[in-house]
Length: 158
Image 1 (cartoon, helix red, strand yellow):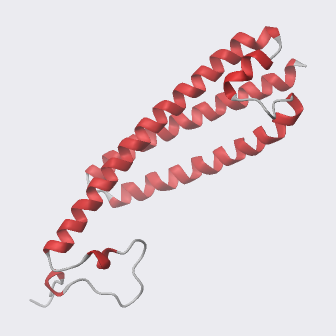
Image 2 (cartoon, rainbow, N blue to C red):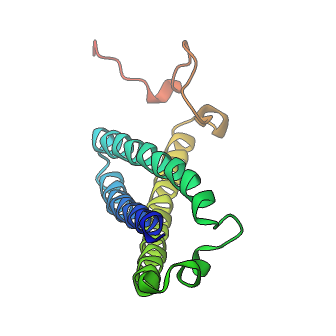
């Protein structure tokens, strides 16, 4: 009976480790944005995407384990009381570690988002100050043929 619960606890520890890695990447993302390092940002985003795919795989495993354990209607905080007695302390620690990892990740992700938003606001102000408009900064990639405002062009022949 405790074998599936041990597997589930291992899965939760893996999720916790992934969240800790995402927290590190969020901090790194903020650093490369502050350094105006677009290539570094691209690398961090690729790593985040890979971790996101790993988390998706862990979620699929979790969805398979939940029915086996009879935890369909349970929350994470209910886990220790649903485990066999010999695993309750381990389950409680695993649950607390996961909640702590998530809290740290959320904090780091919020900080990185704020840094990104601040820099996007600076770019918006720069473009506006040089004759562009907010509609020139439409989200996503510009369609082919869109040019920057005239006073932002560089004449390489000069």
